[in-house]
Length: 180
Image (cartoon, rainbow, N blue to C red; front, top):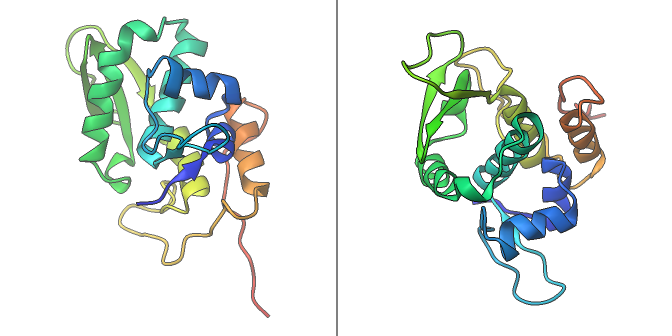
């Protein structure tokens, strides 16, 4: 399982370091997968936790929801995402039904009956694919990348992910390198 540290997590989520620490440590809204060992040591985050943090940021920024009240929802989502592969999320929308109830709905299909907040996962998956070197969700169905580009090492792609998160750029695509 691959982990990113706090500096990379801030770039992938668009959250400030202070907000990330507040949400993952002090308030334990969405706990880090590997807590920091002490002062000055970074926490470790999996792609599932980064996805949850991005969803939480969307709920706060777009819908102005108070996140602390939805802590049980985040715990339920984290447990569900642990059982779901990254590729299985392609073409899905997250439906939040209230309380700790949620479901994954195919993009373009009719949402389940009743009220729900719908969150399209595609932009989040694109950012995670670049940041974690995961198969790109924009590839044709059934076609996976043989060797996903590693973006964490360069930091350049993470800056592009952060600017896309804030709405300053078009969807992020992994940089392709040619060999001589």
